Amino acid sequence: MVLCLLIAALVLPPYFVFMFVVPLLGLLAIFHMRHVKRRHHGEILDWVKEHVLTVSIAILFVVFLFKICYILLFKFPLDKALDYSLAFLVSIYSGLKLRYIKGRVSREIVTGIIIYLMMVVSTIAPIWAVSLLFGSHVEFNFVAAIAVAPFMFTVGLGEETLFRGLLQGLFVEKYGSRIGIFLVSFLLFLIWHVVWINAFKTQFTYVSFLLYSGFLGFILGVAYEKSGSLLPVIIAHGLWDIMISSLKIPVASVPFRFYLISILVCASIYLLVFKVYEQIFLNLFLIR
Image (cartoon, rainbow, N blue to C red; front, side, top):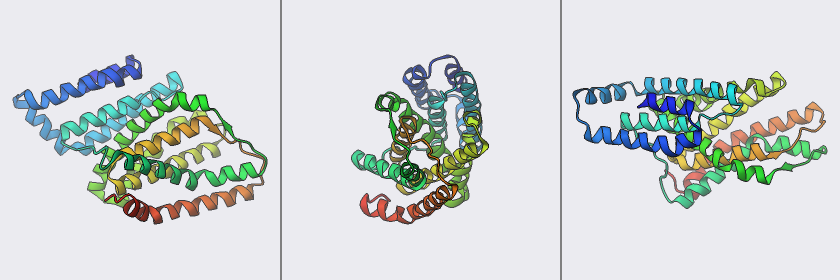
């Protein structure tokens, strides 16, 4: 079944895989677990349950290879349906439960928007503010924002299911919250983005991009750990990607010391975000 999914992801359009192949394989997986009684069936399930962490790391490696191929061939990541699909199948066969919604949908959506605003304010807003003060201008493509929104939320669904729902849950259970979130949501999520090396003109911007990816992943990881629900981080991830794709504020000619100050402000706000997480999530949204 996994082999069929890999072949489909390589030869078929991603939207077709996501809309038709994935639901079909998911139904077949459920049918296989509940109705097909074979001697080896239980052995396979037991092996997956016992080695679920190893299986999940192998899945991450396989998807990463597809991500590299898609970027080299199409200059665009088309692996998101595959991210979700494999994480979904592993969770089914290992008995794990991916909790997408924990409470009211409206509350989950508002929580996702709050997480997104935290991401913006603590990472990129101070730097954009400096550029605007020194003569830069906002370039917002509304048509692009509408056009990319469905794909970007698919990105959020795929990556959050794989990294936060599956991998972070397993690493936190094995190593504890702090180490587990750091290893998955910072380190592995940073490595996940190294394939974009050819998209940047200088090493400085490339390294900055990688660090941003890690720091944003860490915010999402902590948010998922606090909320216990995937929908808020999927929404936050999707909104971030839509913004990056449609909103541009070119870097102005600013003395480096001003950008250094803005980076220090970012760092201060970033640390403050984790101080107010408990109060925002527990008091305003009563998420436990």
